Length: 113
Length: 115
Image 1 (spheres, chains in turn red, brown):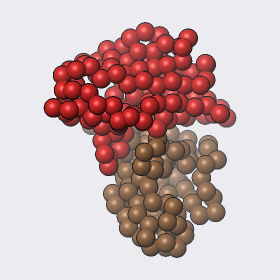
Image 2 (spheres, rainbow over the protein chains, first blue to last red):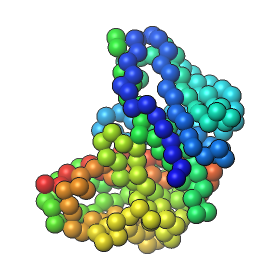
Image 3 (cartoon, one colour):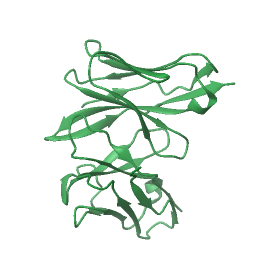
């Protein structure tokens, strides 16, 4: 059973601080990883994807991947109240010859003004 | 910017009634996914299409749920009869070809409430 684990939160972070969201996965052979943001009552929207070990930066967002330790993280710098949402981690896995996303349950992030 | 379209956005129905959801993926996207998401959980894949063919419906409750994508473009998900436990957000997503490094793009979703 391939699994993706996230702390459900809520994670409370002061405005302007760095928010750190973590995700672990069970399949050592996993190769592609995605972070989605989901506002309450809305559908998931892609924040970032990462395929290689190390850091990938996009504006205020940085994704970090460590395949040896089987974790992927998302850092949000200069957190804003508009960043308050649930962040979903997803890992692309081969399932019966089809690629499918295995999803974590999400971490709820609250940015306090 | 191309988007995934879904309708209706909200649906309230009584148990034992039939409901149907429609999805139009991003133009040119061969792979279409239907998910169900219960509050506080990640999306659960119900069915995956590659063009007009079902490639995975292992988590679809086939006694009451059906899905089709007849011409390999838009798709319909049906529930007959609806049960109280079907209340959830139903999400449609699409990707170009279902490959390892492809992003899935989501529509706005349909929120279903069964009374």
